[in-house]
Length: 257
Image (cartoon, rainbow, N blue to C red; front, side, top):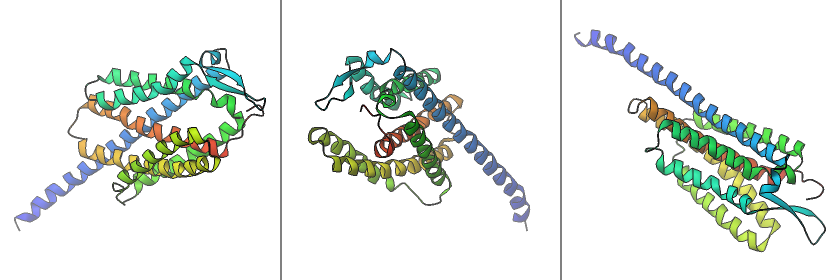
């Protein structure tokens, strides 16, 4: 009989702790999605602004092909902004524990802006209506997949190494195709790429959820704030890559490209 009062005393406390953890998780995920969405918005504004102003000439110049088409080719500055996002990702990935909260957030904004500069060319290559429709299809696909990763009880951890291998394969195949220019290989790369980044979206969402549950009480406010930016970066990259691949598959090119 001595154990009955104890069970009645501690059960509500455990339930309360679970409720607090769930509320904290929802707030944290909302913060991550807000960071990701804000980054995408900044990327879109910068890309559209550069593509529709004289700034575009700083990053790309039009070259006549043998078939008489004008195609944009990157300048030295254009090549710089193409590779700059990789530098930002590496700095954020390896330096997130040493960077301050404000520095981490500033780097994320800088990364989103530079990514916009690197993507400005899509507004020249593809029609505006095509870009808009593919974006909304990508957004719907991403939202459904991320929701699945958050809600599913299946363990997606085992998918991580498989998806990473698929990502490496896509990178290698893309580099090879730069030299051979195979249309069929490019189509296969795009199809596999959609599957890989859809899988990574679900995997990363579940990983973010599990990490929060593991570190919720072990890190302070600044640590959680920095980690939310880093987690947003992971989802941001999945979205951008999925969008670009789907644009290659379903996008309508302008008549002069």
